[in-house]
Amino acid sequence: MTHDEEACSVQVIEFCRTHFRKLGAEQFAAKLGARPEDIAIAACYSAFDLAAVHKGDPIAGIEFARTALDVIERSLLAGETTQ
Image 1 (cartoon, rainbow, N blue to C red):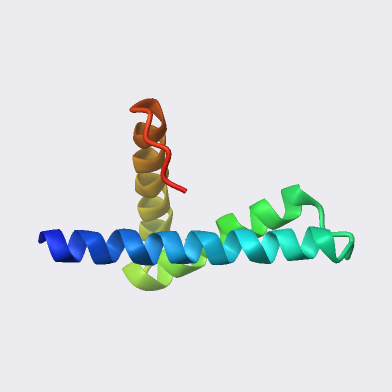
Image 2 (cartoon, rainbow, N blue to C red):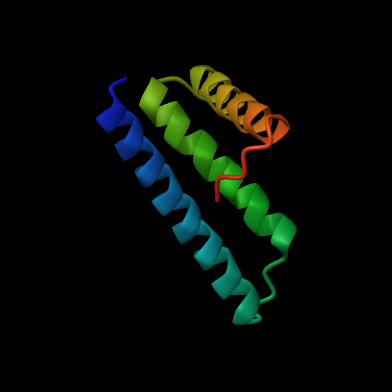
């Protein structure tokens, strides 16, 4: 991945994360009865759905999601605080 591709990737990821966090906060603020756990689980399922479509296979989608979680974990352990 080139430097420009990496920068674009980070920008897209951060945009989506911000958007999804705002959607979750709006549900809490609107007092629609949405529990934080339910929204977090829905976000995980959405990530899986996107990964499964991207990979063309539900099992490959699970592996893709696991890899993404591994990257997140390594970032946290390394002290990176991307938000």
